[in-house]
Image (cartoon, rainbow, N blue to C red; front, side, top):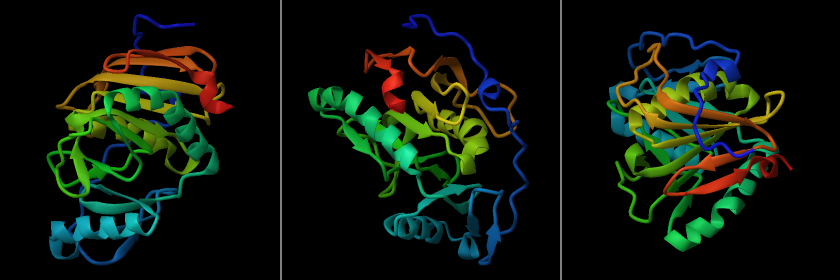
Length: 236
């Protein structure tokens, strides 16, 4: 069915894991540390050098890894699964007509800067205008993105639901789409109207409007997309 009026849906209703308060940042060092289970190793900025952190992220991403910066530390996530890759590809197919008509860009290896720090997230898919505003060579400003897409995976499930929405809201990303193939039934959630003052540990929802549909239902993407997504197609 088509949804024409967004309904509130708390992200913890879809993700059973509760958001844990962020730990106090540790002093920068050069040693590798083990992150939360499923996230992979993290490395602090050598000597607190922000440029070195960004360069390390770039090197890891160029080598085929998914490297993000969270709390000033590089976090390497597991590689995208075949299922997640296929979901992103199917979604891209649905959006191709809009991309071609508007001259938009699809990005799979361009990060979103998360202010006020050097943090960034690397979404599974990001749609931007041709002239999206860059923060630096590795990142764009969240407000210049049209849509950010995350596909949940077992290794990053809690992060996908509890941390990334807060980060993307702080960055000003207008539309966040979370595809959850692990839920039973599978779901697709659209978050809009970001609260740019959201912070880790904030009890408010990072996005004011949240709409969730089950696989097979229709989900409306608002302007500038103005289309209805047949979500069952994403899981075929």
